[in-house]
Length: 444
Image (cartoon, rainbow, N blue to C red; front, side):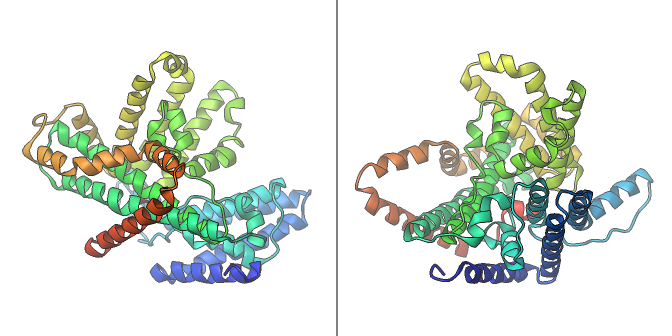
């Protein structure tokens, strides 16, 4: 609605967002609206009491309320189950369904109230505008995490143009293609590994490589779609991925992967705890706590906590022991080092059983394998080699560089719309012909 007033356009986005959210979970719309109402009202109180102790108390109350909902719906059963194991008894579980996107919109609400208390943003006195920010459907269910500071101006004043719409639609189609044509296809190979009885070395590495491509193109594809739709609506969301698989250290990897989450934990948890300015022991503790929470944010299970602690250990090793060694190491070796560690990390991420994680990681190093390559793994390598190569190339800046070269020629005017049209048709055909395959990050 380019010609309408900003408030009318926000109303349309807000209403569409509620319909979008209610389509899957009509009951949980009330929780989402309640979260918006509490945060908005407490934000007004923070502003009213600015400069007084009461403002800090209200800010803390807002944090407690927001995190309480996340704790109840996402972590209650995990806590009860863990307590039951410790006490060697069965504790009845609540079995609550996880509201879609609660991990993302909770962090968005927290960024608003915390930044408001710190004076980084102005209070939003209009409930509609604030709720539009929290419920915005393009990135509501799986990110990226959009901070209020990123869209504060655009909520009340934004421009629409044919160029923005074209750029947004192009980004959306590319993201959809990444999800359907690469992530879903790699997901097929992941499922085949899990269903197979073959325990060869080749199959184990095919599995982790396929899952690494699946999760990257799945999540970066969704981020592309969200950023594209946001651009169509007049919002410019920040990038969430920057070719993480070309990183030459794990520290660099986390500057490139899920940027909105890692930067959120850095700004709202790590730095307030003292960050790297604290004592050496406190600095180590800060990193461990932040990464344990990062893992726990992804899911209420021990495998995610182990995944977070795994990265904490590597990051500490890089900061305390390996930084100078890595600087002198050839780039190709540093890249191989990162990829091996990242591929192992995805085993933690994809398997809830710690026993299964240990078994799969062991297979990657030849322990517990029947042979180097079996009939199934050899067959699937040949069958999925082409999409895997396309995926690997797609993880690098090469396609973007080629597109930039084409833009220097007039042929791009014809080739780009044609290529996007073909991509949309092929992707739609795959969606119609294939089975339901939701985004991986929907469950978080």
